[in-house]
Length: 131
Length: 131
Length: 131
Image (cartoon, rainbow over all chains, first blue to last red; front, side, top):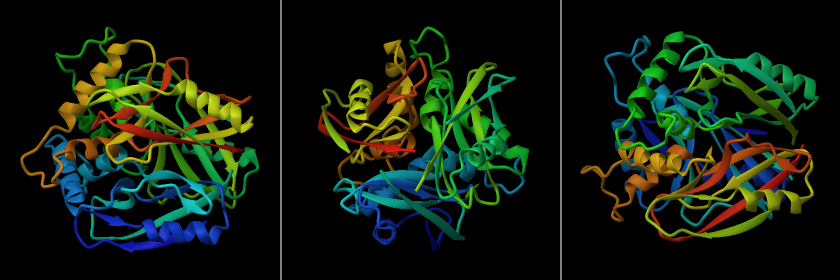
């Protein structure tokens, strides 16, 4: 098990952590198995999506804002209910298969910390299991 | 592997099962690894979210109702398509890392059974794997 | 670890891969544990939902189109940002517990490849871990 920190810089954004996760898998010594990438926060999550065109992450932010906007019925005092809901929608974690000590990601897949209520200091917990 | 039952009391709601999952991890004897919390239903799921202010769960219900409302084009006979869609959005399961026989949840994270078509008797299957 | 291919036939649709995943679990020799069903694409995912009434899958498509429609603010050049967002919403993978060499799915649960930008040739990576 390994932990990494990410300092997010804006209210919402997607931060590529693929290289750090791959390094943690290499450090673990696991050759075949799965890797759990887990976010221990409730207004940030982890998602897999395209690693090439940055417009995809920008569009994801636009789309998630449209799907989970502020709503007048919300009662949570911190005014960040839209972020809590986005977090449950994209998920707090992702699992990726490992083969030959490498993450078996697709060619266009990157692993992203999804910040929905930043800027903040965030943690990610990486666990590799042999299978 | 351990199974717990939850009797939900309303049409939609979030039920804190963190203590039962932690107990199942302790029972499993797994010290380092991951825990899969799995819901074998198609109109209920599992999500991680804030364990402190109950308004967050209330707002999540409001938000998910707005994201997946009834729609006139739906054809499924049981009239619960919004629940099926919510289930695919929040997911049927969550994975949480285990360290020193404890779930490595964040300070504000709880594990919730998400009921979208209750009240019903629901099952949750808890599997701990050593890593 | 096993890989299966699925040729999708329309722009959006849900393809039942439960039998192939069960076969991969049997081939793995894992009796108790978990199975990761992983999609290495960014405009297709994996979801669990009802395996009985085909109208549920049809309604899921209608619902996801309403949740993630085309939006004029999108900038990604391939015009498939709605599909990328659906992919992050339903998720790239699902984990299912294994007991007595069988997937512990509920009676009404099937495992579906969710195509959001087809038709395409898709891959699914199946990893079983003993626990």
